[in-house]
Length: 279
Image (cartoon, rainbow, N blue to C red):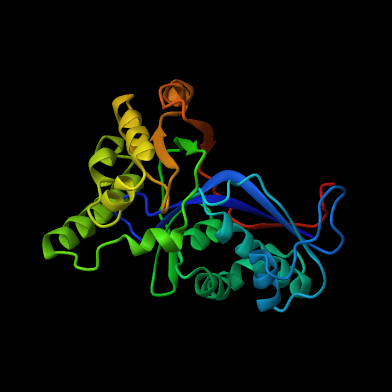
């Protein structure tokens, strides 16, 4: 049994811990014998911990191209994969049973992660708003390209959170609430001209970008090159930029050479159980 889970970009600028986007880069988590060339995950691996938490038995293996420590939701994806693999052991690959289990799986994944945004996107697919243990997909009328600029250094989410302000002013709180609402509305309405303004943030990006100047330069370069919007993906250091599909390669070429780019799309399926391992 194999579970295919998308990477994710969290926050999307102002939606700190509340918005996530699933990306077309996939981790595979399996229960049972590992494919040739893949070692079973040890008991401390986040996929295994989640699998055990979900009641899974036996070996777990992971195969993933998602960069670790780069703000593309690796830990959320493999935790979701472990939980869904445990679900599949008990209930098989029935998509309706999985759909019914999503709220409970999200609750556990968010508890393991410490926040729900990445896990919600990886579970549900698309762009997801989440708060209070509830997740809802944002309907979208357009299907953009996502250009991810990925530098060579890593960021610890836990360490990054220690740099954030704990004395948010009323003005900054209102700014982020308003911009998050504007972003959700712009995505739902297809108002791409509003996205640059809608993805501005005053709560977490200024401190994180100050500590990661290459990411700051890449974000500005993306906007200067015509991206509809750009933001620090999760806690970084990856920068996500949104644009039209036919402009993605040119945008990628305009980003700084001290990182590599991935031209992706928004994944709309979320976590999927596949009956057979692809070996």
